[in-house]
Image (cartoon, protein in one colour):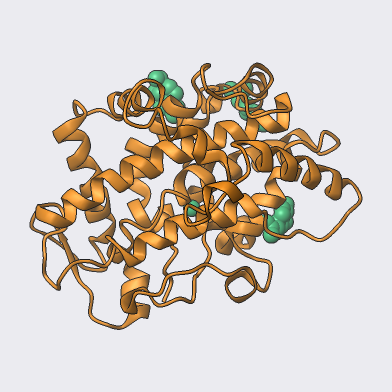
Length: 323
Ligand SMILES: *[C@@H]1O[C@H](CO)[C@@H](O)[C@H](O)[C@H]1NC(C)=O
Ligand SMILES: *[C@@H]1O[C@H](CO)[C@@H](O)[C@H](O)[C@H]1NC(C)=O
Ligand SMILES: *[C@@H]1O[C@H](CO)[C@@H](O)[C@H](O)[C@H]1NC(C)=O
Ligand SMILES: [Zn+2]
C-alpha cells in the first residue's frame, strides 16, 4: 500500500492551486525566511509567469506529470513505504522503499544539485527549482490526508472509505474531500483565505507556538534520538548539502540525503498515530479525527516552508540563516 504518499494524494490538485500554492508563496517567499541570495535566485528564476515566487510554482510538477514529456517524473513525487501502519509499524527505509533510485528522496538530491548547476540551461534550472519547491512543500506535509487517497484505498484493499462534511470519498470525489479538510480548517480558523492561514503560520513560527521548536526542525535528527546525540540545528543540513553539491561535480550516483529521510520518517510516523485512526464511514472533517489532524497539518506545513527556506539559504547563501 502506498503509504507515505505525497501531497498530491494528501490534498489533491485543487487544494494545491487554491491553498498550498499560495501558502508556499506566503510562508517561504517571505524575505524573513529566504536569505538575500536565495531570494534573488528565486525571484530571477521564477519570472512573471510564476509571479516571481515559489507559491504559484508549487503546483507545476503535478500539472505536468501526466504529460508524455514528463512521464519520467511520475514516480518522483512519493516514496512508497512498505511498512505496516495498520498494525502500528511505521518506517521509511532507503533500500526497501527507494531501492531503484526513483523516488522523492533521490529526486530531492537530484534537483538540489541541478538547481545550483550553473552550467545547465536556464530552463533546466527552472525545472529543478519547480520540482524542489513542489516535492518539499507539497509532498512532505505528511500523510495526514492519505486515507483519502484513492489509490492507497484500492491498493490497500481493506475497504477504507472516507467522508468529509458528509461528502463521501469515492474514487471520483476523493480529491474534493481531501481539499475539504484544509478548506474547512482555513474557513473556520484562518479567515477563509490561504494568505491569512500562511500569515498565521508565519506568526506562530516567529513569535508563537512554534517559536521554541522551529530551530529543531532543521536539525535533521530523529525526534527519538537523545538530545545529546543531536547535531545543532542547521549543521548537518549545511554539511550534507555542501557535500552533495561537491559530490555531484565529480559525477557520483544520486543517493538520498539524510535530512529528507528524517523528514520522511517523521511524516510517515503520523500514519501510526492520527492518519488511520478512524472507523469506516466516519466523517473526517468533524469530531476527533479532524481535531487531531489539523494540528499535524499546521505543524507539517510550517515545518516544510521553514525547511525549504533553510535548504535554499544553504545552497545560495552558505548557511541556513534562520532565526
Ligand atoms: C518565463 O521564462 C520562460 C522560460 O524560462 C519563458 O518561456 C516565459 O516566456 C517567461 N515568461 C515571462 C512572462 O517572461
Ligand atoms: C499571478 O498573480 C496574478 C495576479 O495576482 C494572478 O491573476 C495569477 O493567477 C498569478 N499567477 C500564478 C501562476 O499564480
Ligand atoms: C534527475 O533529473 C533529470 C533531469 O530532469 C531526470 O531526467 C532524472 O529522471 C532525475 N532523476 C531523479 C532520480 O530524480
Ligand atoms: Zn506531486
